[in-house]
Image (tube, rainbow, N blue to C red; front, side, top):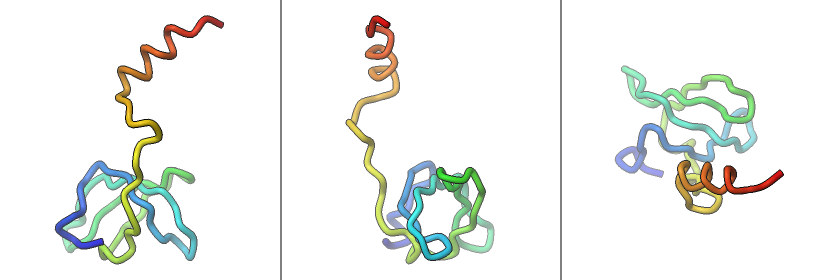
Length: 77
């Protein structure tokens, strides 16, 4: 991954403490890099370089939140 390809608010697979984790980038760090939230633990981490980012996580089915909410509302329990 390269620095100019990174987007704030996007979820990436990142190497954290030797394991791969899903991290949503929340903001830039003033001295370079980004802050993100580990989705598995909820902890905030700092990603210093774009080299730690593996790939962008794609949505499961590619539907919007509103479409998913409509599907759930239509299901009869």
